Length: 631
Ligand code: C2E
Ligand code: CA
Ligand code: CA
Image (tube, rainbow, N blue to C red; front, top):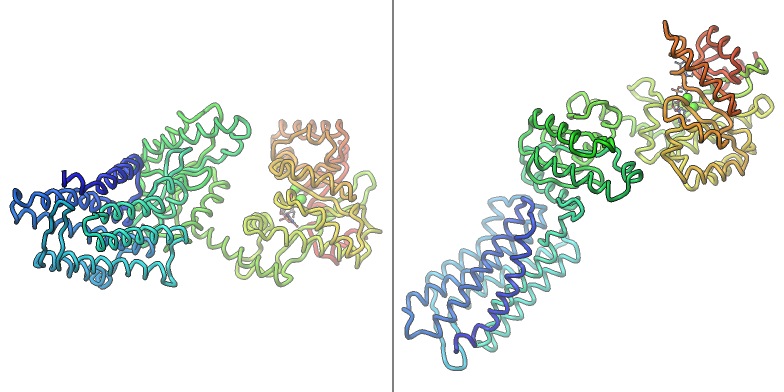
């Protein structure tokens, strides 16, 4: 009876511990050093509780239990107490160091109190008390070990209160609450030795750690049933901290957004789940849902097996919704070779994502030639930032010929970078997408319009031309503040918006969706007109044009060049019908890339309204442009 009276707190503790263990075992775990430390802490807590109960039994049955066994079990019990506190400290230390492995010196300092405790446990004195009021043990062994335990608590507080602590405030609070609970239970037990609270205190401390750090919901994505972005970051930090060789394989569902819009969220979710299962089945290992449309698997080898990647491609093609035409890309990055830390790794992942979009390959492997391209891109990025700050852009103008009036009536303004370092000429086709990605495009848009407006005002272009065409990038087209920005600049130079025709490619317009529609209405209201650029390269949505959103359609040079290529009758017929079709819906047509007299005559004959191309003039600077149009 005395035994059962004495273990009521331990029974409560066991119930709590079973819940923690059950929840812990249900979930998958990351391969982190901190995970191992937590697991060790959990195992020590289980031992501690079992030994706690066993020692209560032996101390309440001193007459029947051999004294050596009683002392031995007490030694183990006391050792388990110190081990829980040691692992609690180690756990916080590892988290704070971002999973970095301990140096020998740090390790020596960390285990010093443990060594002292071990010596006392082996040789220290321990007394036992048992009466009908209760039973407990006391003496130097217990006292010294609690002192060592307190040292670990103080050291843990030291980490939490250090300036360099990397834990979040929520995590700091949870660890502290846990330690105070344990400390409180110890104090109560010292004052009332028969109230054996320390085991329960210990379990509650573990519970606090569990809910703030180790609870897998922090690391798990319930929707795709794999590790989430947070877990990915933690795992990556661990790998870099310990300098393990590794590669990653990213599987990106390129048209995930479109699938969601077309087939609904549930369908998109199933596609993601299916992709995850295929990756799991073919590549194995832990799968991370590292970005909304990307899964990542770590590889401990640098060389990723080509055959496996091929089978993955095959599995994804044949099993994951072929009817929805799921487009995906598999990219492989040897992080060990090409990066030194998590920041660089993320940058490579971002770069590969962009690179993948412009590549035809389904499986892209980062190699030296791709890295060269990345260096070029980084250089351009730097040059662009400088150019935005230091007046580093200029405009060139390409006159546009009116077939009806037989003279130049408009022009397209095209941007150039003044300083391109050792990179030579950089086409806007190359630097505009980089500016978009780096968030510089709105500034560049303002700068180019300002240069155009300034030129128009200085040289009274409004008297010489009907309008100037200015290119809008996709990002500009859907920026909510677009109308305000553009009208403000034109007002500064006293240029009417009707003098500016904004060109946007149909793909960019489609991708911009509603935001673009709102902008078009507002800009039209202010007086701007619009051109659909690069017609014939995108989806060529005729119903869009029929709604009269565009005043002009610019046929892409490729349609024209194809028609004038050798033996290309089909393309010639296509060009002729495109022109007829556009004329039927009453939009004005501009033909780009007109390079020869033959093209000029053909297009004029078929009623194309405007011609633009090297046959008339290349894009030229201001003075040259004025010369050309007044010739
Ligand atoms: P785009 O709007 O289709 O511009 C036409 C491009 O074709 C220009 O190249 C022009 O120099 C070139 N071109 C014109 N006629 C001929 C020809 O007869 N033969 C050949 N081979 N090429 C011809 P550029 O200036 O390199 O511009 C490339 C692209 O960069 C533009 O394509 C446009 O999408 C973008 N871009 C240029 N300036 C700006 C700008 O100020 N803002 C934005 N957002 N994009 C710009
Ligand atoms: Ca254009
Ligand atoms: Ca164009």
